[in-house]
Length: 506
Image 1: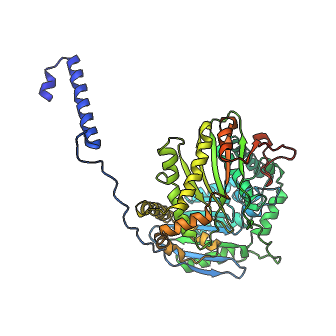
Image 2 (image 1 turned 90 degrees about the vertical axis):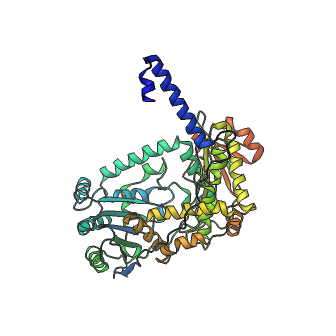
Image 3 (image 1 turned 90 degrees about the horizontal axis):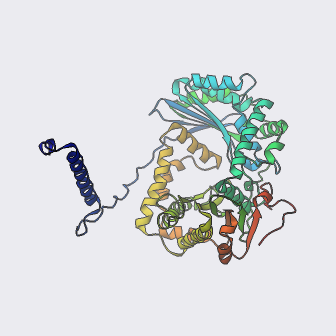
C-alpha cells in the first residue's frame, strides 16, 4: 500500500485515502452488524457473574453514661477513618409553618462554634487533609468527618465541637437563608423539581413527610435564630444520637476517644418529644393534579403513592421490584425512552423511612406527550402486578441492586453510613452481611405480589407539571377527575396545595 501511494499525485492520493477509509469503515461495520447474508448474529452481553459475599467486620458497641450509643467498625485495609454523629431526627420534626428548619440547623453546624469561626473550621479540616460535612434528611441529622487515620483525634475533636457547640451567628443564618431561597426559586421554575414537591404533598397531605425538607419560599424567611437554637437544644442530645466510627482504628482507642470528646455531653432532664411522622393508614382517593406552567419547555410526569417503611418485612422484595422498573435497562426507561423516544430518562424510587415513605415513578417529556407518558407509567406498574418477571430479566436487575450496595462499601465513609442507617432504624447491625443473600432470595412471585399490594395504580396519584394546554384534553380522557392549579396558586405549605381563595379547575 505504501509503494502504491508513493506513485500518486496529491489529488489522487487524497482520493485513494478516502477510498481506503471507506473500505475500512465498511469492513468494521460488517464486523459488528454482519452482512445481509451473514449467519453470525450480533453478540449479546454475558450474564452477570455470581455476586461475592460481603463480610464486614462485626461492629463493637458501647453506650456511654449519658446515653450516647457508640459503634466502631474496624477495617484496617486502608489508612482512613470515617466518623459520623447522627441525631435521630430530621425534617419530620419541622414545625408546620417552619419547614426547612431541621435542614438549616444541620447545615449551620459547620458555620461556627464557641471557639472556632467558620473559616477556622474549614482551615483546620483542610490542614488535616479531611472532609467535614453536615445536613439533614427526613429521619436524621448528621455531621461527618473523613480523614487519614493518623489525624483521627483532631478531626473527631472538630466533629464534636460543631455538633455540641454551634453558635448560629445571624450573619451565617442570613447567608445560608439566601442560598436556600435561591435554590427554591430555581426549583419553583423547574417542572421536575416542582412535580416532586407537589407529589409529596398529594401523597402525605399535612403529614410531616409532606413538606419539602429544604423548606418553601414562604417558610424559610419565617425561620428565626430562636427556632434554630430551640430545635438544636431539643433534639441534639446524647441520648438521641449515635456515633459511628469506622476504618483503621482499634475499638478500644475509638471508645476512649468517644468518651473523652462526648462523655461530658450533658443529657437533658426533659424527655424527647413524641415523633409526629405517622402516615395515614387509610388510603386516600386517587388525585390527578396538573400544575399549569405556561411556556414550560417540557412536562414532568410523576406517579406517586405511599410505599413501605425501612423496617417492613418486604423491604428486600421492594428493592428488587423497584430495580425491575428503574435504571437504564429498567422497564420504565425501556418503554418510555428506548422504545418510544419520549424522554431522556424514566425512573422510579422506593424511599424507605422510619414510617411509610413514598414510591415515585417519573419522567420528563415534551408537553404534547405528557398524557401518553402518564398512561405508560400506570401501565408499567399494572404490568408488574399482573405477570411474573422472568428469571432472565430478574437476574441483571438483582445484579444492579447488589452492585450499588457493593459500591457503598468500597469507602470508609460509605461503610460508616450503612451501619449508621441500620442503627437509625433499630435494625441488627449484622444485616449488612445478609444484604446480598436477602436480595438474591427474592422470587418473581414475591415481586408480583408486592407490586399488587404495595405499588398498585388504582389508589396512586398522578402529578403533571407543564404547559397544561398542550396535554390537558388527552389527560382528561384517561383521568376524568383532573384538578388544575395555576403555578401562582400553588401552596406547598399545607396539604391543600392551593392558596386559600384559589378556585379549583376541572
